[in-house]
Length: 174
Image (tube, rainbow, N blue to C red; front, top):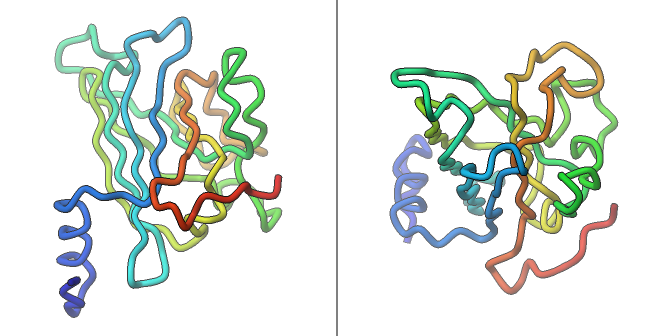
């Protein structure tokens, strides 16, 4: 049972501790970044939004001791990670908003010598809306200005978001 405290932090901590996400994307790198891998997990919350936990290994700065680099992370329209991720489409943007206000625009990852861990809460999409779409990791940070996608560079990692909760197994309308 969730704690339902004054702030959501304890509820979020319990969700992460139980480690039973409702959906997840297993991210793999492209041909130039074969060591890139990890998971992005999505948890339903009692607050009407989604808790997102990302853990990535093998980011491009792995071979540079003490280095830190930012990498853009977005949800793209399609979960088709074939052909160097060329079929993932644009950022998930059901409202037709300008960048960086797409529902698929997520906080950047801070890669510390190839490793990144991030947790954040988001109410711009539901779990049901993102099943079958892709999490994309880009080679550069998002500049939060350039249209339509933040000048984040090449797609270096991709993972299709899959339902782990059987009640979510539906196909998104693309």
